[in-house]
Length: 575
Image 1 (cartoon, rainbow, N blue to C red):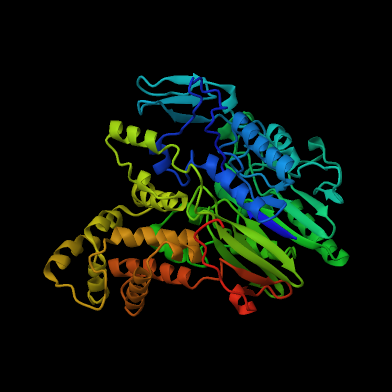
Image 2 (image 1 turned 90 degrees about the horizontal axis):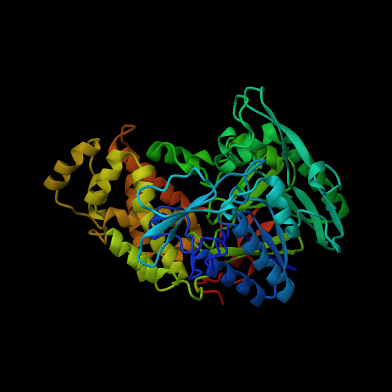
């Protein structure tokens, strides 16, 4: 049996079931919000359909969803997303098993959501569940309860058919609290950091055996810890958002889940069950050990805040689950953690709304877990919003360059470049380095790698002006910005990124990385910081197999599929 593992569909219903009050029944989010986000919005509608169609074409009937099924948990979006899955279950016999993501629900009572939707003339309206939300200027505002994101009590029943409750035909079902699937039987106490505030929270983890011999372990790694102080439990600000916490907050707040995982793993081995575990968040460092260089180069980034600590990975490895699938970060990655005889492999699953658009196909064959990564490049109607994007860009005097895309994957590749321009450089990069980026090309980096004296960013303009660029580097006039975009492509896509970066560029990047690796500069100098940038790129190029690979279920060894006598397929489509 093959299993499809998908992550972060972030389904947004552009057919306007969100009660935005528009007669044309189209609900398109703004290009400005899309360019500034880590994901695209409108394109999720057709991308989710294309993803499910590809799974159906492959004859796969069991689908794991590693969280964030919905855009932001809005009630109407939740209804539309679950209705879509129900349709595919009814028409094609698909069985979906999910875990909740941080965008699907919020704490006990939920939270308000406010979104900007495009008007035909390129302006926008604000649609919100919050009657106190400020729209600014003369922007039209529509208040709708359908925009509200529910808490556990509302969201889990809405997702109920995805394994959260026992179904007829299941051979086994349980949760950390026993075999009672009622939500009121699945609660625990969660306490604020100062120990003074306690809330009763639901944990939505479960174990299900949908077919003989296969155990699917859905781990709810959302942690909504109350903030210090006796705050109103109905307010969003009363809790620490689970977005950055992830597994780092699990041992202190949900130790009972880790104990249960260990018991499940032991029983699975004793009973001869094949165990597949998944949660929304990665349980091993997704930066493959490059966190120190990222901290040195960029200081505090979202990736660093979301990186599981070594002691957390150690605790997870000690449970014996061995293989874990995750989403959340919208990356393609394979990470391995070892501690004595304990080992754990975390397989990060990409999203269809971020680069690269792909999912995983998993097959347990004897003592091996075979993983194939399927890139879905072709999405019918991927450009549905493009015409309105151009109208918006013309009105706002901004760029609509992403609308020049020739397909869905190309659109996401271009969107990543806009993210670098509008989000990563201004928000994550130190100002002095970000200011240098438009001034440099690869030839300048070649020159810097050969400069003995340590430099600071303010030294660079005079040095570049006085030194004639020499060296073997090809593509010398390629802007440094282009290399940074490729750096992010490798950061997010690992092996899959190689389908989107010219081999000549990769060769130049390797050359520059080797040049910087050969130097020795004082800590904090410009060359030292660029050396960190280059080391990370090199590490990602040398990371564990992440496209088509095999995991030895006895040893945890990860091997490329061609080591098993199979041909590595370099897919660029969904066939």
